[in-house]
Image (cartoon, rainbow, N blue to C red; front, side, top):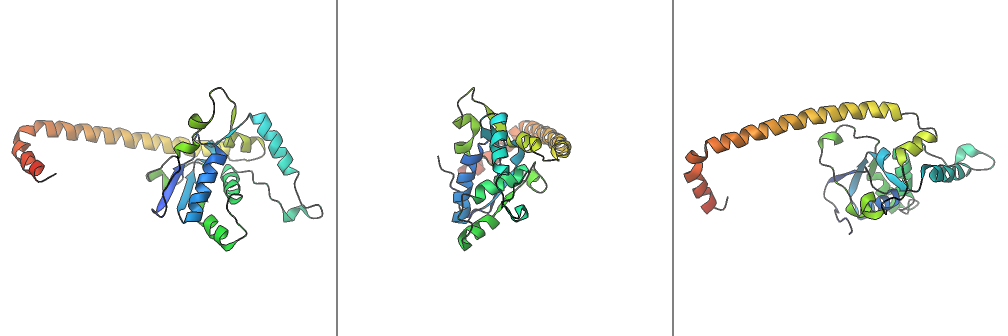
Amino acid sequence: VVLTMVLSGVKVIDGRDHLLGRLCSIVAKELLAGQKIVIVRCDEICISGSLVRNRVKYAQFRRLHMNTNPGRGPFHFKSPAMMVWRTVRGMVHQKSPRGQEALKRLSTFEGIPAPYDKQKRVVVPAALRVMRLKPGRQFTVVGELADSVGWKHKELLGRLEGKRKAEAKDFYEKKKEKAALRKKAEAAAAGELAKVNEVLAASGY
């Protein structure tokens, strides 16, 4: 299954429970085609393999540096959002103008900051962990890996996400109450609206 969403405004992808490589490869393809993409909840994206294994791989990655002046790179990002951004960067030809333009169309975030908390979010079925990883296999959550290698904002993010989820729950409860009242009102007025509904049905509404 290939996600086709070219040139349809900004797409907000909820990264929770997606596999990192599969998600980034699809995102990279869409960016190159001209689609603007925002990935939220990068801290909940998964990588196959245990945390110990992925920490070893990250430690090997940390050893890569310029011999005479390590300050000139390569740079080892510790935040989940930048880890995801760097993964996508490796999948677009970022040293060409086309690749640079594609990267400008990408935004990555930990959690779901405003205004994306009020916008419709989508998933990529072809990259979901439950669709692609055999049950019982070990996997690592990017947020836990980042926290174990020096990312310092896991607790802060947890507080902000807790607040956002509480507000979202209140909104949903009010929405359900409003829908129930509307349904009740429609049922009460069903007799009066019967003729009107017949006319509307005849007109194709």
